[in-house]
Length: 379
Ligand code: HEM
Image (cartoon, rainbow, N blue to C red; front, side, top):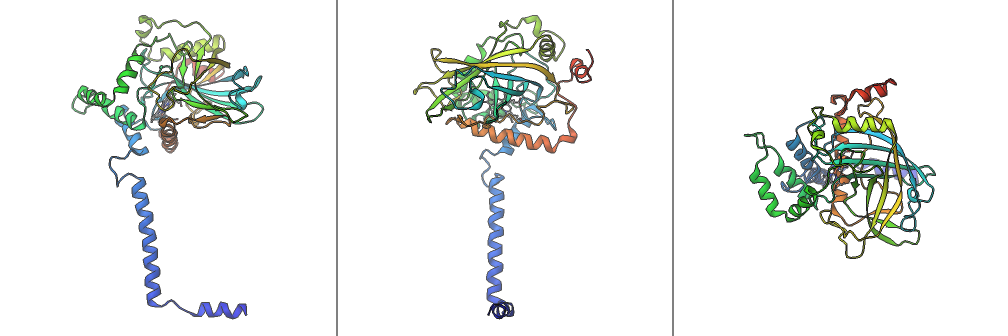
């Protein structure tokens, strides 16, 4: 029976009407696929924020620098470890926060902005990015944190509009003050956050800076209880305010050079401080600080004892994207809309720089000390 029925199927050619219907169906499928591509590319909605538009805005502001991160482009790799105190373990079941757990850390210090060769300056936002790998297994945790108390915007759209408002006017080569004024009229949250950011104490370097998560996350414990938290890395060394003479140094890598010299002298340490939110604290708005009276927990100590430049000759952080959504069980995203936008932007930035790998200049920071260190010699 089976061979006969196969023959009868093969023997029946499609009628012209069936052929037309089949071709029409294929056409409809192809049209649908094309529309999806056009939609995802943003051509159907010129005002919708896409990753390509976000990347284009970085480029319009800071220029094209193939092979580098689209933001925080000037940086260098560090490594060390994190010892958990266990004090936050009642709030989160994350392995990295278990009492006595030691996690290997690969990190990166950087300056905000898409210019890999910008001169170090006191006002420029400094960042610390960390990837924790708990020794006993368990989930990996990545966090990218800044030395400002709040973030200037509370949505990806606000971030994008701020980039566009700050880009240089082609006729003057400088930002158009009217564009920034118009942006601020529509973003009172940026005006409020800007006042807090400008009032911050700028410390002498990376080693005595405090770095803040700004976005809110949620700790989830073994019983499933979820708590809003923000975190900060606070330096163990005393904070020294940046002196005017320091900023006047002609060495354009003075912050990075100091960091290298300090880390070679002795390992640098920070405390991971967790701030525990209360039900009324804003979780979806990184421009708003939480009240200072909130409970704070010392969750452990970060030690960084090695540096390397990010030029592919040993910089272990080069291909790490410090995506804030790479979280272990026990740490979750909050309802802050910036978190998913960051995740998508960091992924796009990584894809672009990987594609441009062959065009990349050796490194954003190439101080002699790092070169000598990598060569195993003394600077
Ligand atoms: C919508 C808002 C944001 C956008 C579009 C954005 C975009 C980016 C991009 C494209 C990168 C480069 C990523 C890479 O190539 O690896 C980056 C790096 C970074 N961002 Fe954001 N960002 C946003 C908000 C924030 C916030 C709220 C923080 C808060 C702390 C932050 C902290 C950092 C840090 C520390 C880095 C450097 C990470 C590293 O050293 O690799 N960003 N950002």
